[in-house]
Image (cartoon, rainbow, N blue to C red; front, side, top):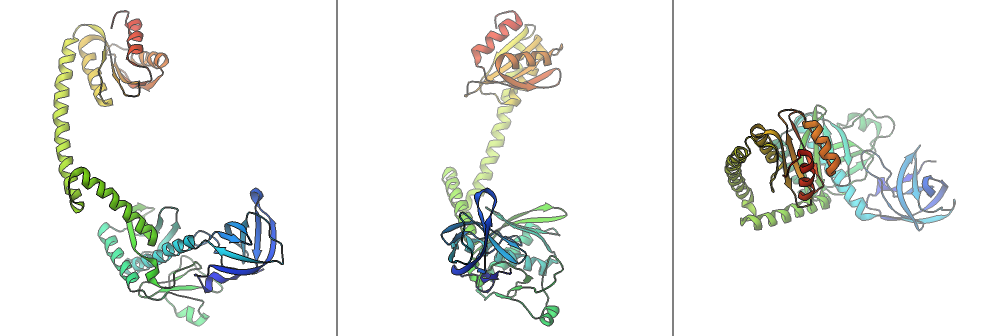
Length: 389
């Protein structure tokens, strides 16, 4: 049975009545309900399905099957019964904004660069569009500006099934060769495309269009897109984050990038100076350990690289095995073991087994972390080295 698709004639229809044509058990205790007509859009063409309520039952999924629209419901509906349906309008509006915005962006990119839209998906967070050509940031900025100009123009959107002669003469985008009736969607001066999805009635309903960026993908690019309410929420979140950053940097909101660059430069210079001081300190500590044989050092606030460099310096000077542990706030320790005479892997395995650790490496160095604290580390190495440490 072919379902009459009310959403094709009126994408803003929120409530309707219909006759239940069939109801059968579905997966997970659900029921698959077919109606003689419906305003629920089924999944297709990159657009997710509508949700809502049908005859008092929650509609959680909607799919198309051999011309029929099948609604997954939480309870059975009696065949022949007339039921009222209500779609989740905020969800429908969001999906229409994303899908209509995608059409405008894809049409403009096709017209400007000749690239085809070869993939489209409305995700929970962002919309992705795949194109078979590359775009840089400057080109994306130009497309975003022109897309928003199309929105500001607030032109009517046309959705229709052209007669065969009109279709044959029409210039429109399509991902594949089509047979049978073809539905076209036109966004004036932006796009004409074959599409079965739901769309806004005027471009102004789309709201702001934001292109988040593009990454190379399968010889082309994947563009991330947000429209309407999603774009507004994203811009609001970015603004709030920038406001917090401006407070931290004592900079005006439009000057945070320059302030962050200054701070990054200051931090790089401070790290270089700290690195020189640390290297000098490690050299003095290694000199103090010269000729002492096996050595354990417990040095707080060292990162993994610092632990490794100190263990290497001490190992080369002490004439035995060097173990450097850096206690951390969680009660564990980072460690590095340097055994120029051999045995680093064996010592590493013993450390991990005795002190709840993990790590490894290639001779003469091993590195990792343990859950044990300083007292347990000292007790282990007193036994391992056979002397007070």
